[in-house]
Each structure stands twice: as C-alpha cells, then as structure tokens.
Image (cartoon, rainbow over all chains, first blue to last red; front, side, top):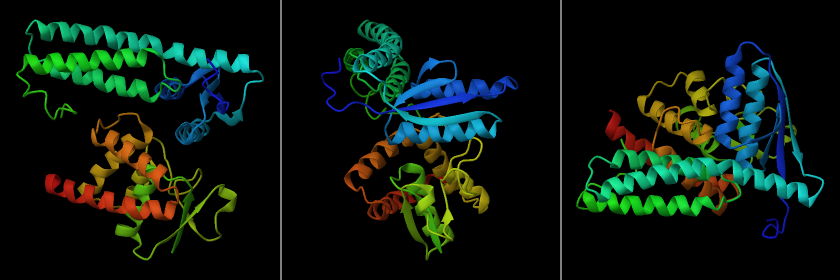
Length: 176
Length: 138
C-alpha cells in the first residue's frame, strides 16, 4: 500500500523509560500515547508519523516523562526498507479498525432504533460522532473503515432527524 | 519587550501572543525561531521546553501565563479551558469550542505560514472569542 505515498513518511520515535513507582506516571503516559494513536514498536519505544502536531505532542510528553523522573529521547527515523515501512503503515491502519467497527455497530443500533420510532437518541448519536472525530484525528493512514463509519453516522443522523420531525436534529453539534 | 517562541504557531502559541499583547505587554515584539539555539538573546521565551512560561504539569502554556501573571479574569479562564483542550487534545474540560478552534487555527496556519502575519489575524479571532464569552460569563 505504499504506491500512494510518493514521498516516504518521516517518523518520530519516542524511546522512554519511567520508574516503576508511582505507577500513575506510567499510566498517564500510556494513556496519552493511546490518545495520540501511537504504536508501540516494543516496550518503551513508540512511533508516530511525523507532522507538526505529533512532533509537538511527543516533545511535551518527553518533558513530562523527564519531570516524572524518567528518561526520554525523541528521534526522527525512517525504516530501512520500503517493506518494513509498508508493514508499519498497515499496523497503524489495523490499530484503528477495532474502534471504527465498534462505532459502526453502535451507530447501526441507534439508526435502527430511530427507524422504529425510538426517542432520545440524539445524545447517543452525538457521543458516537465525537468518538468518530477523535478516531479520525489519530487515523494517520486513512483506514478503509473510516468511510464506512462516516456513512453509518450520516445515515443514523438522517434517521434520527426524521424520527424527531427534523427539528431536534438542528444545531446539535455539541450536547451542551 | 521582546518575546520569543518556536515557529509554526498553533492554538496555544497564537493564544499566548494575543494574551501578551492584550493583557501583559501592549508594546510586545515577537520573534519566532526554528531551534531554541536560535532564540534572540534577552528575549522572554514561551511555550518552549524548559522556559518559565511553558507547559507545566498538566497545564498548557496559556494556563501557565494566567497563573504566573495572576490573571483571574473569568473569561480568560474559559479561554484557557478551550485552548487547553485544543492544544493537549485530552478533553480535560470537554469544551466543544476547542474542536472548531483547532480546525480554524490549523487552516489559518496553512494559509498564513508567516507567524507574524498569522498572529496578527488570530488576534482578531481571540478578540472575538473574548467578546462572545464575555456576554455569557459576566
């Protein structure tokens, strides 16, 4: 799947180590990396494709690790071969699939409920739309399931709007 | 006074520039550098690793500014929440504005790659946000 990438991706690699205790630092770092959609190459070694955002986020994380008494270095890197890079890209795509699948399944449930005239679905739908946007942000290589999830959400929003006479669905980008 | 930060400003740095001009130093001049070693001598650095005015614990630089300069304006506190969520993407405050702000500033950054020009325009954006939130908060 590298054919569509004329220029090869640059990667940022964070190599880090944190003291075993207190464990909250390790959990916080792990959670932040998960939010960013970073991929663990092995214990304490994570990769992200480089752009202004990923790089900056990892720089701040490096600072946090050091403040927590750990060690962290940040590297720019490229896998030695096109094949290895291809495998890495595929691993990134695969890492998003589960989340997209869960969004699709849950969205279909909301749509079916709406079609059967169920009420109060907007909040659930809004939550799924937020999850989708978060997922899309860390979907660096356009997992094929992204389109499927987007289509499912559009269909569900249409169904919910129709079920509520098209009034309730307006201006509900946020649930606030 | 001369203030300096890294090039390629996004939400946190553009918001800090606005905060400095409007609330801290109306005469402020800004320099934007590629690597911290290129920072001009004597400039006050911000949003740079190791600077006084930078990320601290869970806080983004804008939040650190508010604490360092004891700015207790509730509207600024609200803007800090929005900036935090856009900058750190951790949904700490669950501010829906942060997603829109993130997209707008990211797009402005692509359209206006020069940080002096960019921050001239983002100032207007934060003025607007401040005015809008003032109606709601006060």
